[in-house]
Image (cartoon, rainbow, N blue to C red; front, side, top):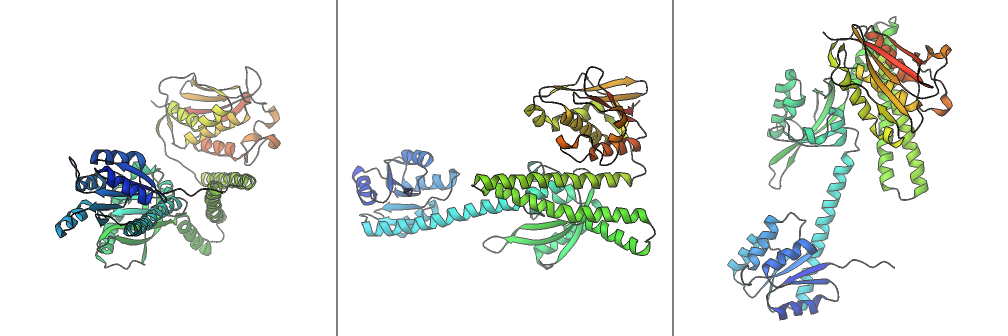
Length: 492
């Protein structure tokens, strides 16, 4: 039979007999902690975390009012009920106690019945307070799993809080964007005045709270994503508006699908647009439920205590992650295939490679794979930033096929007016007859032992083609394994 934890009562009085009297009253039901002066009481509050304090007023050096004021103003702790025990009974004495932060008063000499009633009443209030705090923390935690962006703005539109999903939508870490101005940081300039006016009207009460509106955000990658917003205001106890609560659903894909549907209704003969429409709808309709499955399974993993059930839930979660990767990969490839031209900027190949290696640091460490990078300094090239995806996919392929406790080598060679980047693994190698096939869509060799869909190398080939560059695979000259290579034009 488990024992129920007893509440801690801190008794503060400079008279030893008074402390012992309180102990005699309380010992049978509570754990009693004693302090005989204000300084000792403050130390006990920090070290013992009492559930309630019985505080004498008249004490030398530091009286009860001062102790109460320090606890309320200087100590960052949860609510602790404080009952002042005093022989003073004037209205001014009580007002001073209330101003200091006392919750109730007992007049000396204290009777056991009255003492029990006041303690039990305040402990009930404390329990309710603690439960509310716990529920609030849980609520914030649950918000992180909601599939929409939820944020709190102050009246100047500065970001006070945002849930994890919202930060993911914006492609930033939460601690980087909290306290930034929402409008100047994320709203496109041509929408800024309209959005500011909308929130001003919301604060003034001239806009209905249940009305929704739409405006886009510029996310971390520079892409403009469109959202449907449902907004409301948060008020303090006096009814004054203190914050704006905004809830946004990413409708970018839906808007794209709507536009494509309209175009499809007028031009059925345009098969390429029909294909793009199908791809966008497929990605939107599959990713949303898959994302919800992932969120709920992560919650179940945290709360499930039965190991067998937890194992099953983990398997569901892993399968869902594979499904999401496949959908996103297929959609990304479809998007690439719809492109005819891309823009180019000056990039540093070494920086791209280091970022790619860092993304696989945990897997590399777990499998004891040595990553050899015999290059230093900068390697300027002309490329689109999506070339980093090429390096990530090729490195992923090399790590995936390389045995544990072996080595993957990444090299940058000078080839005249171009750089040649190579990824050298120590896997089983690829037969000559299959070397070109590995870059075909959904083609993958040795499927029985390798995870993945084989779509990664198809993405690599398409991005390299858009660069008008070359990609290929040869045998590892130093032993078994393969060398995947790609060329890029040097920057002048």
